[in-house]
Structure formats: C-alpha cells, structure tokens
Amino acid sequence: ENQAISKQIARTRAALGTPTATDELRTLSQLGIHYAKKGDLLYPVLKVRHGYSGPSDVMWGVDDEIKRELGVITKALKADSENYPLYKGRIEPLCARIREMVFKEDRILFPLSLRYLTQEQWFMVYRDLFEMGMAFVDVETMPRWPEGEAWMKQQSSSAMKPEILEGKVKLPTGELTLRQLQGILKLLDVDITFIDKDDILRYFINEGKVFSRPLSALGREVYSCHPPEIIPVVRQMILDFKAKKRTQMEIYRRIMGRPVGVRYMAVYDDDGEYMGTVEFVQDFQKALDKFQK
Image 1 (cartoon, helix red, strand yellow):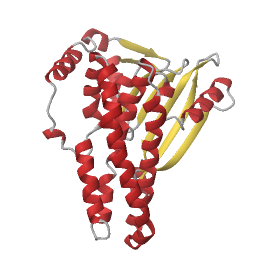
Image 2 (cartoon, one colour):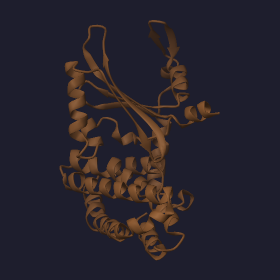
Image 3 (cartoon, rainbow, N blue to C red):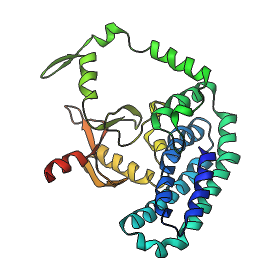
Image 4 (cartoon, helix red, strand yellow):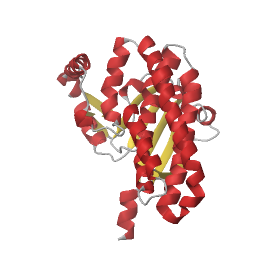
C-alpha cells in the first residue's frame, strides 16, 4: 500500500492546476483505509501488549490530522472546483506530510512491528487485513500468505460446534437457538459493539458496514481502540454512565459523505447495576432517500 501511496502522491502533485486535480485528491482519500488498519491492527498491539506507546501516541494523531486536512480540501473542491486557488497552498504541504508518514511507517512502525509482534498476532493481522479492505491496491492481486491461510482455515474449522449453535437462549418474551439469534442479528443494518463493565470490548457485529472492527480488537480495553485525542471523551462518557449522570449519548454527522448516527447507551441489570456500554452505528442514507421520494 505504501508503494501505491507514493505513486498516488506523485500523480496528485503532477495533476495540480489541471482539471484532474480534484479526482486525484479524491483517490488519495483512500488513505483513511490504510490509516484505519494501522490504528486497529498495529498501534494497540504495540502499546498494550508490548509496551511501545510512541506510534499510538504520536503517529495516530498525525494520521488524524492528515485525514482531516485531506477531507477539508476534497470537500471544498468537490463543492466548487473554482475553490482550487484558495487551497493550492495547502495541497503540497499535505502531500509532504503523507510522504513523511510513509517514510516513518517503513523505517519505524513496520520494523518495530516485525520485531515485537508474535506469530499468532501476525496471523490475526492477516485475517483482519482483508476484512478491513485495501487502499490503492486490488485485493485480487495481493499475494497470499500460506501459513496465514492455513491458520484461518484452522480457526474456521474450530468454530462453534453445531450442538452449541442449537442450544437455546431463554428470554423474558420467548426463546431462540443461538443459530437463530445469530441469523436475526445478521439482518440488522447496523453496527453494534458492546463494552463490558470493566471497559473491555466483548462483542461486535458489523452488518451496517460503517466502521471496520477487526476480530483482534476483542478482549482489548476500549481506550486502546481509539486515537489519543478521543480517549478523554470516551473515558468521561463511560464514567458518567457508571455514575448514572447520563445514560446515553448521540452523535449525528456526515462521515465520508454519509449521514451517520452513533448512539452510545449504558446497559444496566434489573437491580440498576452497570453492565456495560453498547454502541449502535447506522448509515441513514437509505432512510433519507425513501423520505425524499
């Protein structure tokens, strides 16, 4: 991906001042996918499991700054290509920052990861890599890792036994087999994530396909799943939920041009004891399109 990013930066710089500049900048927006994989698959593992906080505390923040700046510029040029002279002076410094990040990944992040991640952790990275998507690269042309493929096959064959899937979950209003419950959850056009009372990510389902969630994130403390600047907000929200100062928080904004709703809700048992926090993420574009017809 970094080789492709370097080539895309060259194409973007060559297109500056031409009618294709906006299209090349839009293509560069795939950086978000590349940076998301670093944030979900490498930064937390290096920090939490191996004690190296530098990439997480520094690189993650720079990644977000680059994404924000790229988003501002592409949005402005998409709205009106005549805005180009206003943003011309910001594009070259942005390309320079992206090139610098490629250098830091190749010289610092990846060698550090190769040195400290275990074989098992690399298997998990490989598994989640394809689920999170490729940036600037056709997934069909990607070389496969035989050992990783064998590990994934083994993991798949050792999945839940049929008798467990047919076991029943008894609820106040009826009962379902675990297989039936899984089938129902897969039909929900929403991303659901559950964090337990100890702030550990215990469950997610990504049928809404708004945000990526790697399986390797399961069992991690929720704070390791967010960039440093967001952690204080997440921590305060969960503290408020535990103290019952509030029971939910809702955010509605456009993400990658889509109208997205994010709802955080505290989960309590029948005695009012805090059990955890659930996050619902939903893309409302289909609903808006229906209302506009």
